Image 1 (cartoon, helix red, strand yellow):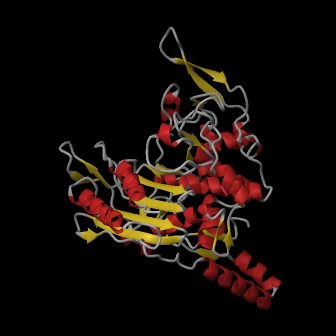
Image 2: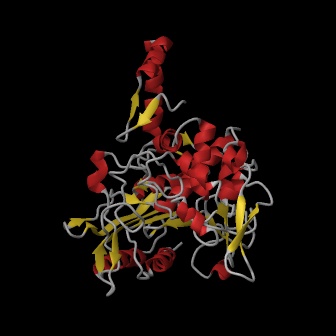
Image 3: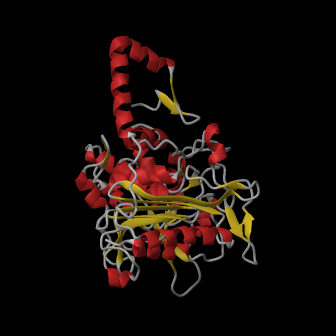
Length: 446
Protein backbone atom coordinates (compact mmCIF):
# COMPACT_ATOMS: atom_id res chain seq x y z
CA UNK A 1 0.00 0.00 0.00
CA UNK A 2 1.39 3.39 -0.94
CA UNK A 3 2.26 5.86 1.77
CA UNK A 4 0.18 8.37 -0.18
CA UNK A 5 -2.97 6.62 1.02
CA UNK A 6 -2.55 6.92 4.76
CA UNK A 7 -0.65 8.82 7.39
CA UNK A 8 -0.37 7.78 11.01
CA UNK A 9 -0.78 11.12 12.71
CA UNK A 10 -1.96 11.15 16.33
CA UNK A 11 -1.91 7.38 16.49
CA UNK A 12 -4.56 6.94 13.80
CA UNK A 13 -4.71 6.72 10.03
CA UNK A 14 -6.74 9.12 7.99
CA UNK A 15 -7.87 8.30 4.47
CA UNK A 16 -7.02 10.87 1.80
CA UNK A 17 -9.56 11.92 -0.84
CA UNK A 18 -7.74 9.80 -3.43
CA UNK A 19 -8.05 6.71 -1.30
CA UNK A 20 -11.71 7.44 -0.60
CA UNK A 21 -12.39 7.68 -4.33
CA UNK A 22 -10.68 4.34 -4.82
CA UNK A 23 -12.93 2.73 -2.24
CA UNK A 24 -15.98 4.24 -3.91
CA UNK A 25 -14.94 2.79 -7.25
CA UNK A 26 -14.63 -0.68 -5.67
CA UNK A 27 -18.21 -0.38 -4.52
CA UNK A 28 -19.58 0.57 -1.15
CA UNK A 29 -20.96 -2.86 -0.35
CA UNK A 30 -17.66 -4.57 -1.08
CA UNK A 31 -15.77 -2.03 1.02
CA UNK A 32 -18.14 -2.48 3.94
CA UNK A 33 -17.82 -6.27 3.76
CA UNK A 34 -14.06 -6.01 3.61
CA UNK A 35 -13.94 -3.74 6.64
CA UNK A 36 -16.20 -6.04 8.64
CA UNK A 37 -13.98 -9.00 7.81
CA UNK A 38 -10.84 -7.12 8.81
CA UNK A 39 -12.32 -5.83 12.05
CA UNK A 40 -13.57 -9.31 12.95
CA UNK A 41 -10.14 -10.82 12.38
CA UNK A 42 -8.45 -8.06 14.37
CA UNK A 43 -10.87 -8.45 17.26
CA UNK A 44 -10.03 -12.15 17.41
CA UNK A 45 -6.29 -11.56 17.11
CA UNK A 46 -6.31 -8.80 19.73
CA UNK A 47 -7.96 -10.77 22.52
CA UNK A 48 -6.15 -10.27 25.80
CA UNK A 49 -3.62 -12.85 26.88
CA UNK A 50 -5.12 -15.35 29.34
CA UNK A 51 -4.08 -15.30 32.99
CA UNK A 52 -3.03 -18.26 35.07
CA UNK A 53 -2.42 -18.89 38.74
CA UNK A 54 1.37 -18.85 39.26
CA UNK A 55 1.35 -22.00 41.38
CA UNK A 56 -0.67 -23.91 38.79
CA UNK A 57 1.79 -22.65 36.14
CA UNK A 58 4.72 -24.12 38.08
CA UNK A 59 5.92 -21.23 40.24
CA UNK A 60 6.52 -21.62 43.96
CA UNK A 61 4.48 -19.15 46.09
CA UNK A 62 7.57 -18.10 48.02
CA UNK A 63 9.32 -17.36 44.71
CA UNK A 64 6.51 -15.04 43.68
CA UNK A 65 6.74 -13.33 47.06
CA UNK A 66 10.44 -12.74 46.48
CA UNK A 67 9.66 -11.02 43.16
CA UNK A 68 7.27 -8.69 44.99
CA UNK A 69 9.91 -7.83 47.58
CA UNK A 70 12.55 -7.32 44.87
CA UNK A 71 10.46 -4.77 42.97
CA UNK A 72 9.46 -2.93 46.12
CA UNK A 73 13.02 -2.81 47.43
CA UNK A 74 14.57 -1.41 44.25
CA UNK A 75 11.90 1.28 43.90
CA UNK A 76 12.05 2.40 47.53
CA UNK A 77 15.83 2.48 48.08
CA UNK A 78 16.44 4.98 45.28
CA UNK A 79 17.83 2.52 42.75
CA UNK A 80 14.86 2.83 40.38
CA UNK A 81 12.00 5.34 40.09
CA UNK A 82 9.41 2.77 39.09
CA UNK A 83 9.10 -0.41 37.10
CA UNK A 84 6.69 -2.88 35.51
CA UNK A 85 7.40 -6.62 35.39
CA UNK A 86 5.36 -9.11 33.37
CA UNK A 87 6.03 -12.86 33.27
CA UNK A 88 4.23 -15.28 30.95
CA UNK A 89 4.32 -19.05 30.92
CA UNK A 90 2.60 -21.24 28.35
CA UNK A 91 1.11 -18.10 26.83
CA UNK A 92 -0.61 -16.95 30.01
CA UNK A 93 0.24 -14.04 32.30
CA UNK A 94 1.36 -15.50 35.63
CA UNK A 95 2.87 -12.35 37.12
CA UNK A 96 2.25 -8.64 36.49
CA UNK A 97 3.21 -5.89 38.88
CA UNK A 98 3.91 -2.17 38.83
CA UNK A 99 6.08 -0.72 41.60
CA UNK A 100 7.31 2.74 42.49
CA UNK A 101 6.39 5.87 40.55
CA UNK A 102 5.66 6.81 36.97
CA UNK A 103 6.59 10.34 38.00
CA UNK A 104 8.24 10.85 41.39
CA UNK A 105 7.74 14.62 41.66
CA UNK A 106 4.00 14.49 41.07
CA UNK A 107 3.53 11.40 43.24
CA UNK A 108 1.95 9.54 40.32
CA UNK A 109 2.33 5.84 41.07
CA UNK A 110 3.51 3.45 38.37
CA UNK A 111 0.75 1.51 36.62
CA UNK A 112 0.95 -1.62 34.52
CA UNK A 113 -0.29 0.33 31.46
CA UNK A 114 2.53 2.89 31.66
CA UNK A 115 4.30 3.64 28.39
CA UNK A 116 8.11 3.37 28.24
CA UNK A 117 10.83 4.42 25.81
CA UNK A 118 12.15 1.00 24.76
CA UNK A 119 15.15 2.24 22.72
CA UNK A 120 17.07 -0.78 21.36
CA UNK A 121 14.17 -3.12 22.00
CA UNK A 122 12.91 -1.53 18.77
CA UNK A 123 15.57 -3.58 16.97
CA UNK A 124 13.80 -6.91 17.44
CA UNK A 125 10.57 -5.50 15.98
CA UNK A 126 12.28 -4.05 12.91
CA UNK A 127 14.22 -7.27 12.42
CA UNK A 128 10.88 -9.10 12.32
CA UNK A 129 9.70 -6.60 9.70
CA UNK A 130 12.66 -7.57 7.50
CA UNK A 131 11.87 -11.26 7.90
CA UNK A 132 8.23 -10.63 6.96
CA UNK A 133 9.51 -9.27 3.65
CA UNK A 134 11.70 -12.34 3.14
CA UNK A 135 8.76 -14.64 3.91
CA UNK A 136 6.87 -12.87 1.13
CA UNK A 137 9.72 -13.07 -1.37
CA UNK A 138 10.29 -9.31 -1.48
CA UNK A 139 13.96 -9.72 -0.50
CA UNK A 140 16.54 -12.22 0.68
CA UNK A 141 18.70 -11.49 3.69
CA UNK A 142 21.69 -12.60 1.63
CA UNK A 143 21.03 -9.68 -0.74
CA UNK A 144 23.45 -6.74 -0.74
CA UNK A 145 21.88 -3.73 0.97
CA UNK A 146 22.79 -1.67 -2.10
CA UNK A 147 20.17 -3.53 -4.13
CA UNK A 148 17.55 -1.51 -2.23
CA UNK A 149 19.62 1.41 -0.86
CA UNK A 150 22.01 2.37 -3.70
CA UNK A 151 24.02 4.70 -1.46
CA UNK A 152 25.61 1.55 0.06
CA UNK A 153 27.09 0.36 -3.24
CA UNK A 154 30.59 1.33 -2.08
CA UNK A 155 31.29 1.69 1.62
CA UNK A 156 34.52 2.40 3.49
CA UNK A 157 36.25 1.43 6.72
CA UNK A 158 38.36 3.58 9.06
CA UNK A 159 41.57 1.70 9.95
CA UNK A 160 43.75 3.02 12.82
CA UNK A 161 47.36 3.70 11.89
CA UNK A 162 49.85 1.54 13.75
CA UNK A 163 52.88 3.83 13.84
CA UNK A 164 51.37 7.32 13.78
CA UNK A 165 48.20 8.83 15.28
CA UNK A 166 45.02 8.89 13.28
CA UNK A 167 43.42 6.56 10.79
CA UNK A 168 43.17 5.91 7.08
CA UNK A 169 40.04 5.15 5.10
CA UNK A 170 40.01 2.04 2.92
CA UNK A 171 37.37 0.46 0.77
CA UNK A 172 35.20 -2.32 2.18
CA UNK A 173 36.33 -5.74 1.00
CA UNK A 174 32.79 -6.69 0.00
CA UNK A 175 29.29 -5.26 -0.06
CA UNK A 176 27.29 -5.22 3.15
CA UNK A 177 24.39 -7.67 3.15
CA UNK A 178 21.05 -7.48 4.93
CA UNK A 179 22.19 -10.38 7.11
CA UNK A 180 25.26 -8.37 8.16
CA UNK A 181 22.91 -5.66 9.42
CA UNK A 182 20.61 -8.12 11.21
CA UNK A 183 23.57 -9.68 13.04
CA UNK A 184 25.41 -6.39 13.74
CA UNK A 185 28.42 -7.56 11.77
CA UNK A 186 28.25 -4.84 9.11
CA UNK A 187 30.87 -2.78 10.97
CA UNK A 188 28.49 0.14 11.60
CA UNK A 189 28.94 1.74 15.05
CA UNK A 190 27.20 4.70 16.69
CA UNK A 191 29.60 7.27 15.29
CA UNK A 192 32.57 6.77 17.58
CA UNK A 193 36.05 5.30 17.17
CA UNK A 194 38.36 5.91 14.22
CA UNK A 195 36.61 8.17 11.74
CA UNK A 196 34.32 9.53 14.46
CA UNK A 197 35.26 13.08 13.53
CA UNK A 198 33.53 12.60 10.18
CA UNK A 199 30.41 11.24 11.90
CA UNK A 200 30.37 14.22 14.27
CA UNK A 201 30.74 16.63 11.36
CA UNK A 202 27.78 14.90 9.70
CA UNK A 203 25.82 15.26 12.98
CA UNK A 204 25.15 11.53 13.18
CA UNK A 205 26.23 10.20 16.57
CA UNK A 206 24.38 8.31 19.28
CA UNK A 207 21.14 6.40 19.04
CA UNK A 208 18.68 9.24 19.74
CA UNK A 209 16.74 10.35 16.63
CA UNK A 210 13.45 11.83 17.92
CA UNK A 211 14.59 15.42 17.31
CA UNK A 212 15.53 14.91 13.66
CA UNK A 213 13.46 16.80 11.13
CA UNK A 214 14.32 14.54 8.20
CA UNK A 215 13.08 11.11 7.08
CA UNK A 216 15.22 8.20 8.19
CA UNK A 217 16.19 7.44 4.58
CA UNK A 218 17.97 10.80 4.29
CA UNK A 219 19.96 10.18 7.46
CA UNK A 220 20.84 6.63 6.42
CA UNK A 221 21.96 7.69 2.95
CA UNK A 222 24.39 10.14 4.59
CA UNK A 223 25.68 7.33 6.83
CA UNK A 224 26.64 5.32 3.74
CA UNK A 225 29.28 7.89 2.83
CA UNK A 226 31.00 7.78 6.24
CA UNK A 227 33.72 5.33 7.29
CA UNK A 228 32.59 2.27 9.27
CA UNK A 229 34.46 0.56 12.10
CA UNK A 230 35.14 -2.89 10.65
CA UNK A 231 35.08 -4.89 7.46
CA UNK A 232 31.73 -6.59 6.80
CA UNK A 233 31.41 -9.89 8.66
CA UNK A 234 34.61 -9.52 10.67
CA UNK A 235 33.35 -8.26 14.07
CA UNK A 236 30.24 -7.71 16.15
CA UNK A 237 29.84 -3.91 16.11
CA UNK A 238 26.75 -2.47 17.76
CA UNK A 239 25.33 0.64 16.15
CA UNK A 240 23.10 1.96 13.39
CA UNK A 241 22.55 -1.34 11.58
CA UNK A 242 18.85 -1.54 12.46
CA UNK A 243 18.24 2.09 11.53
CA UNK A 244 19.57 1.17 8.11
CA UNK A 245 17.21 -1.81 8.10
CA UNK A 246 14.31 0.54 8.82
CA UNK A 247 15.16 2.56 5.72
CA UNK A 248 15.44 -0.69 3.77
CA UNK A 249 11.95 -1.78 4.90
CA UNK A 250 10.63 1.55 3.62
CA UNK A 251 12.37 1.13 0.26
CA UNK A 252 11.14 -2.44 -0.27
CA UNK A 253 7.58 -2.02 1.05
CA UNK A 254 6.78 1.44 -0.32
CA UNK A 255 5.52 2.51 3.13
CA UNK A 256 7.20 4.58 5.77
CA UNK A 257 8.42 2.47 8.67
CA UNK A 258 5.75 3.72 11.05
CA UNK A 259 2.98 2.58 8.74
CA UNK A 260 4.58 -0.76 7.89
CA UNK A 261 5.07 -1.71 11.54
CA UNK A 262 1.54 -0.63 12.39
CA UNK A 263 -0.14 -2.54 9.58
CA UNK A 264 1.99 -5.67 9.62
CA UNK A 265 2.86 -6.10 13.31
CA UNK A 266 1.18 -3.75 15.79
CA UNK A 267 -2.38 -3.84 14.46
CA UNK A 268 -2.65 -7.62 13.93
CA UNK A 269 -1.00 -8.34 17.31
CA UNK A 270 -3.23 -5.87 19.15
CA UNK A 271 -0.26 -3.74 20.23
CA UNK A 272 -2.38 -0.69 20.97
CA UNK A 273 0.20 1.49 22.71
CA UNK A 274 3.36 1.11 20.59
CA UNK A 275 4.45 4.22 18.67
CA UNK A 276 7.44 6.21 17.52
CA UNK A 277 5.79 9.40 18.79
CA UNK A 278 2.95 9.40 21.30
CA UNK A 279 -0.50 10.68 20.34
CA UNK A 280 -1.88 13.29 22.77
CA UNK A 281 -4.25 10.88 24.54
CA UNK A 282 -1.31 8.65 25.62
CA UNK A 283 1.08 11.32 26.93
CA UNK A 284 -0.19 11.18 30.52
CA UNK A 285 0.87 7.51 30.68
CA UNK A 286 4.50 8.09 29.62
CA UNK A 287 6.98 7.17 32.36
CA UNK A 288 9.48 9.85 33.35
CA UNK A 289 13.22 9.31 32.80
CA UNK A 290 15.53 9.57 35.82
CA UNK A 291 19.24 9.45 36.54
CA UNK A 292 21.36 9.49 39.73
CA UNK A 293 23.35 12.36 41.13
CA UNK A 294 26.89 12.09 42.46
CA UNK A 295 25.61 10.77 45.78
CA UNK A 296 23.45 8.09 44.17
CA UNK A 297 20.08 9.79 44.68
CA UNK A 298 17.47 9.78 41.92
CA UNK A 299 17.22 12.98 39.88
CA UNK A 300 14.78 13.80 37.10
CA UNK A 301 16.41 13.95 33.66
CA UNK A 302 16.02 17.35 31.97
CA UNK A 303 13.50 18.10 29.25
CA UNK A 304 14.60 18.46 25.67
CA UNK A 305 16.32 16.39 23.00
CA UNK A 306 19.16 13.98 23.61
CA UNK A 307 20.04 10.57 24.98
CA UNK A 308 20.08 11.68 28.62
CA UNK A 309 16.89 13.76 28.63
CA UNK A 310 13.17 13.14 28.48
CA UNK A 311 13.48 13.24 24.68
CA UNK A 312 11.02 14.60 22.13
CA UNK A 313 8.76 11.58 21.84
CA UNK A 314 5.73 13.79 22.45
CA UNK A 315 6.88 17.05 20.84
CA UNK A 316 9.38 16.09 18.14
CA UNK A 317 8.99 16.68 14.39
CA UNK A 318 7.44 13.16 14.03
CA UNK A 319 9.20 12.36 10.78
CA UNK A 320 12.31 10.37 11.82
CA UNK A 321 11.32 6.76 12.47
CA UNK A 322 14.37 5.21 14.11
CA UNK A 323 14.24 1.44 13.67
CA UNK A 324 17.22 1.08 15.97
CA UNK A 325 15.97 2.90 19.05
CA UNK A 326 12.86 4.97 18.42
CA UNK A 327 9.83 3.06 19.73
CA UNK A 328 7.75 3.44 22.87
CA UNK A 329 5.61 0.62 24.23
CA UNK A 330 3.99 -1.02 27.24
CA UNK A 331 4.87 -4.28 28.97
CA UNK A 332 1.58 -5.72 27.69
CA UNK A 333 2.31 -4.82 24.06
CA UNK A 334 5.88 -6.07 24.12
CA UNK A 335 4.83 -9.29 25.82
CA UNK A 336 2.36 -9.90 22.99
CA UNK A 337 5.15 -9.41 20.45
CA UNK A 338 7.43 -11.84 22.29
CA UNK A 339 4.67 -14.41 22.78
CA UNK A 340 4.19 -14.32 19.01
CA UNK A 341 7.86 -15.24 18.66
CA UNK A 342 7.60 -18.02 21.24
CA UNK A 343 4.54 -19.35 19.41
CA UNK A 344 6.55 -19.71 16.20
CA UNK A 345 5.32 -16.52 14.54
CA UNK A 346 1.63 -16.30 15.46
CA UNK A 347 -0.65 -14.99 18.18
CA UNK A 348 -4.32 -15.85 18.14
CA UNK A 349 -5.50 -15.62 14.55
CA UNK A 350 -2.61 -13.37 13.50
CA UNK A 351 0.26 -15.00 11.63
CA UNK A 352 3.22 -12.57 11.50
CA UNK A 353 6.15 -14.84 10.58
CA UNK A 354 6.68 -18.37 9.40
CA UNK A 355 7.99 -20.82 12.05
CA UNK A 356 11.08 -21.27 9.87
CA UNK A 357 11.88 -17.56 10.07
CA UNK A 358 11.46 -17.55 13.85
CA UNK A 359 13.89 -20.47 14.09
CA UNK A 360 16.36 -18.66 11.82
CA UNK A 361 16.11 -15.45 13.84
CA UNK A 362 16.78 -17.21 17.15
CA UNK A 363 19.78 -19.25 15.98
CA UNK A 364 23.37 -18.08 16.35
CA UNK A 365 24.76 -16.56 13.13
CA UNK A 366 28.08 -15.12 14.30
CA UNK A 367 30.12 -17.94 15.78
CA UNK A 368 32.00 -16.85 18.90
CA UNK A 369 32.18 -13.12 18.08
CA UNK A 370 30.20 -12.22 21.22
CA UNK A 371 32.36 -14.21 23.60
CA UNK A 372 31.75 -17.23 25.85
CA UNK A 373 28.34 -18.83 25.98
CA UNK A 374 26.40 -16.37 23.84
CA UNK A 375 25.81 -15.69 20.18
CA UNK A 376 23.59 -13.44 18.11
CA UNK A 377 20.80 -14.27 15.73
CA UNK A 378 18.78 -11.91 13.55
CA UNK A 379 17.89 -9.23 16.08
CA UNK A 380 18.33 -11.25 19.30
CA UNK A 381 21.17 -12.35 21.55
CA UNK A 382 21.07 -16.14 21.93
CA UNK A 383 22.36 -18.34 24.78
CA UNK A 384 24.61 -21.16 23.53
CA UNK A 385 26.13 -22.67 26.66
CA UNK A 386 24.85 -22.43 30.23
CA UNK A 387 28.17 -22.89 31.93
CA UNK A 388 30.06 -20.47 29.71
CA UNK A 389 27.35 -17.82 30.02
CA UNK A 390 27.35 -18.22 33.79
CA UNK A 391 23.79 -17.04 34.53
CA UNK A 392 20.45 -18.80 35.04
CA UNK A 393 18.53 -19.64 31.89
CA UNK A 394 18.31 -22.28 29.20
CA UNK A 395 20.26 -23.10 26.07
CA UNK A 396 18.35 -21.36 23.30
CA UNK A 397 16.85 -18.51 25.34
CA UNK A 398 17.05 -15.16 23.56
CA UNK A 399 16.56 -11.49 24.33
CA UNK A 400 18.10 -8.04 24.55
CA UNK A 401 17.47 -4.71 26.27
CA UNK A 402 17.26 -0.97 25.83
CA UNK A 403 19.22 2.14 26.79
CA UNK A 404 16.61 3.23 29.35
CA UNK A 405 17.47 0.14 31.46
CA UNK A 406 14.73 -2.07 30.02
CA UNK A 407 15.25 -5.76 29.35
CA UNK A 408 13.43 -8.87 28.15
CA UNK A 409 14.00 -12.50 27.33
CA UNK A 410 12.21 -15.51 25.90
CA UNK A 411 12.98 -19.05 27.10
CA UNK A 412 11.49 -21.68 24.77
CA UNK A 413 12.67 -24.57 26.97
CA UNK A 414 10.79 -23.19 29.99
CA UNK A 415 8.00 -21.66 27.85
CA UNK A 416 8.69 -18.27 29.44
CA UNK A 417 8.40 -14.64 28.37
CA UNK A 418 9.78 -11.97 30.71
CA UNK A 419 9.39 -8.19 30.14
CA UNK A 420 10.93 -5.71 32.60
CA UNK A 421 10.52 -1.97 31.99
CA UNK A 422 11.85 1.07 33.82
CA UNK A 423 13.21 4.47 32.71
CA UNK A 424 16.74 5.10 33.93
CA UNK A 425 19.77 6.73 32.28
CA UNK A 426 22.36 6.71 35.02
CA UNK A 427 26.11 6.39 35.60
CA UNK A 428 25.39 4.45 38.79
CA UNK A 429 25.51 0.66 38.27
CA UNK A 430 22.28 -1.10 39.23
CA UNK A 431 22.33 -4.90 39.57
CA UNK A 432 18.60 -5.52 39.18
CA UNK A 433 18.79 -7.28 35.79
CA UNK A 434 20.96 -10.11 37.05
CA UNK A 435 18.92 -10.49 40.22
CA UNK A 436 15.67 -10.50 38.26
CA UNK A 437 16.86 -13.39 36.13
CA UNK A 438 17.98 -15.32 39.23
CA UNK A 439 14.65 -14.69 40.97
CA UNK A 440 12.49 -15.72 38.00
CA UNK A 441 14.32 -19.04 37.57
CA UNK A 442 14.56 -19.48 41.33
CA UNK A 443 10.77 -19.25 41.51
CA UNK A 444 10.24 -22.13 39.08
CA UNK A 445 9.17 -25.26 40.92
CA UNK A 446 8.61 -27.38 37.82
